[in-house]
Length: 163
Image 1: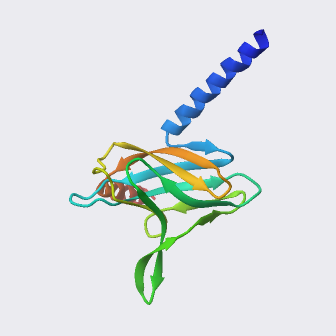
Image 2: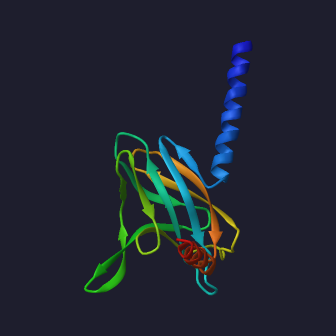
Image 3: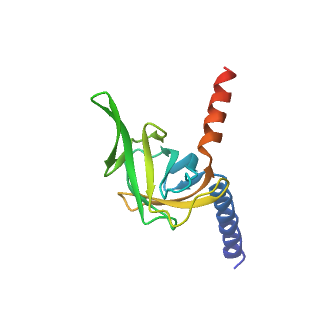
């Protein structure tokens, strides 16, 4: 009985640690690690946004992201910006492969999640839970902070001035 109680306490400690990691913008599930995630605040009068992150696959097998869901929207799609006839346009993707022992970055002007039909505006410093769905039935829940488009650009440009 003592051993069983000890294992149970360790399980609670592990779940607590896992919860803390998710709250700190990192998520781990079945060898997928998500870092540096955020969602853009909505522009007044719109009901769309986009989400960005780094998805790390620490397995020896390719992982395929097939979608995402959230309570804030009934429609989240994987998109990619592509150059076509000297025009940048967004293309919907059915899936996104994260190669074995590698990562994919979802970023402005690249792969990203488009979030449509938002139930309410997203405000700076809100947190939004998003579930990433993979083809092998893995689900990763991440808590993404909402950031201002302006603030993000200022941070990036300030960062570049220091180099």
